[in-house]
Length: 246
Image (tube, rainbow, N blue to C red; front, side, top):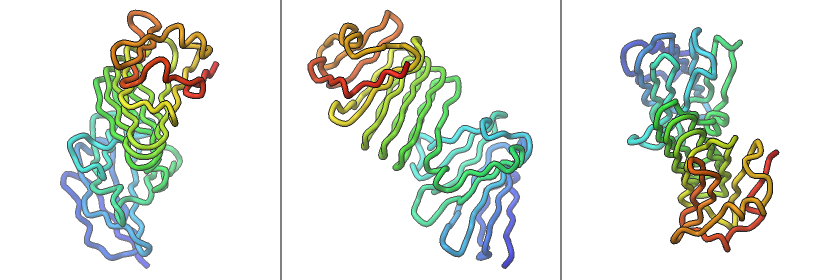
C-alpha cells in the first residue's frame, strides 16, 4: 500500500493515481489554486495538508457564489485561495483537512460538511449546503443563504439579508448593533430567532418593539437596529419562535 502525494504549486491538479491515499499540500503563499477530479470511495483516502503559516481560524470555508454548489472554497488570510471542485458531490471530495501549524488539527469529511462558513469584513455572499451549516456574516452588508439542513445564520454587523432555505433554521442576533437585517423566509411554525447579550429579554418586550409594515413585521430596536420578517405579521408570532439568551 503506497501513497500518492501531490504538491499544489502553480497549476490545477488532476490526480490520476489509483493508490490508496492521495495527499495534497497547500503551502504558505500558494496563491490561487484548484484541486479537480477528487474521487472518494472505500478504497481511497483524499487528504489536504495546510502548511505552516496558517491556523484553522485563518481560513474561511465557503461555497462560492456563481459556481457549482458542490464546490468548496478555502480563502486564506494572506489572500490566497484553494478551490476544491465537487467536494460535496456523491463519491467525491476530501476526507480530511490537516493543519500542520495547529499540531495537525484535523477536520473530518463530516466536519467539513458541517463547517462554519465565516465571511470577511466586506459585503459577502455566503452559501451553505445540504447539511446543518452555521453561517456568520461578520462585518459588512452580507447575504446569507442556508439552503438545505437545519442551519444557524448570524448576520453580525451591517444590514444583512438572511435566507434559511429548507429545514428548521435558527437566526441569531448578538449584542445590540447588528444593523437593519431582513429574514426573507421565516417560518413561524418551525423556526427560531435567538437574541444574545440582552438585545431583548422577553417576548412581551419583543411585541412592544414589533409593528406591521405592509406584508412584513418589523422589530425595531432603534433607527439603526431592526429585524424585518418578510411575509409575517405580528399576530403570527409565537413565544416559541424566540429564545432570549441572557
